Picture 1 (cartoon, one colour):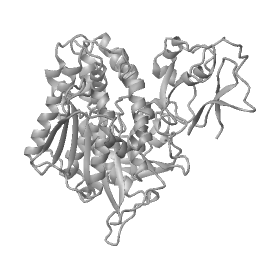
Picture 2 (cartoon, rainbow, N blue to C red):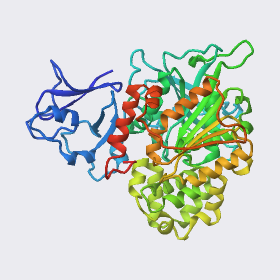
Picture 3 (cartoon, rainbow, N blue to C red):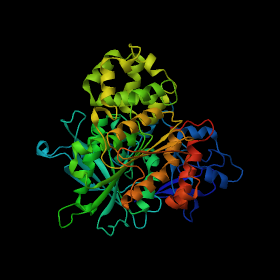
Picture 4 (spheres, rainbow, N blue to C red):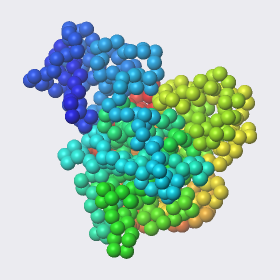
Length: 546
């Protein structure tokens, strides 16, 4: 693969090298490539804080930060990389959105909207069962620290699933990450973890499968997941990451997310190159956990409660489901986030649901005012970050529609009710872990308390941890080690603290800075998570989604 170079324009002969699998910062090359134009001392500021520190008498230009994005790369250092690598040139479209800048240069691989792999249907498509594999391809994935030698084996698999209505067939894609250390336990079974990424987008070009593939122009999407997936790969767990919002990018649609999640398990188990195979009795040699946080937890939660009725044959394989920051009641979340820093979620979810319900789209077209229509159009085409930035602290519920409270009005109220977790007697049958912040600015904790009560009353087995310190994004990090520990115990065959119908409820202060977290994650992974959290998410004045 051709290496990419970015020169420090302080004329100090220091370069960054990137081949989509590693970056070496501040490396001085004996025969460096020619710069893009003359590199006069002081004519541009170095965009990389690490290089800036090594360039004496030069300072980092704060103005450059608005044209950069943050990626966690090799080791604990989080680098700030220019969105456009030739940073000495003026930024094209200076008033453009993050999404427009992101795709303003030709991508190294096709966008999902342009790639027939995501949409083509074989001639016998209608006769195929849900979970059937349609096609596959080996891929090179974005850099995962510690997995270059030997490299991860990775594939994309297109498979059949169902839409929100449970009838309309759809095509979606999963990504399989298989570490070289994947091996069966003494019982002959492989450990397989199905991971719900925080996709959070109603726009097709921001799919997780695209973000995880090397050569994409949406590396920010992978950056938010790599640090959580890597500790699982360390353990030799085969990791499957489905595009659970499916073909129509139905952000927030519970049934569609659950169907796609469960069908990804069917497809992955039948994907021969993954190597799980069957035993003499014809059973797959696999035990499976599911894990997700925030939007990913929505998919896991719906998969967990739909599994018995939709994919009963998977009962013998799924040993547990872990969910953090669980968005179980979209109406309550909208009330909780309106006029706040996460008000954009209302717009994104409303458009995501409209992608699944044509009659909701018709209602929005009729009742959204000019401001609301512009915001919904952005949600259909642009990134989570853009949608959040555009709608920050806006009164979405009060000023975007000609109806004063859309949450209790006709069609929107009906759709939100259908997508409330725990309704209609749906209950998980596998052991579950739920972890929830008491200071969550996205998910009001009472809704999670109520869900645990509802599920437990119906016989569910739930270990429930209530965190009394963290906020939404912080718990994503601080709760990571405990979630991995919990899944490890399920793979090991240990019993949960909870019993069916008797939840184990604890209120704790979670932290990454503990011996337990270090023992679970390893010192390097612990440091990676701490640095990403502290340097990018909890800085004073920093909003967590920026």
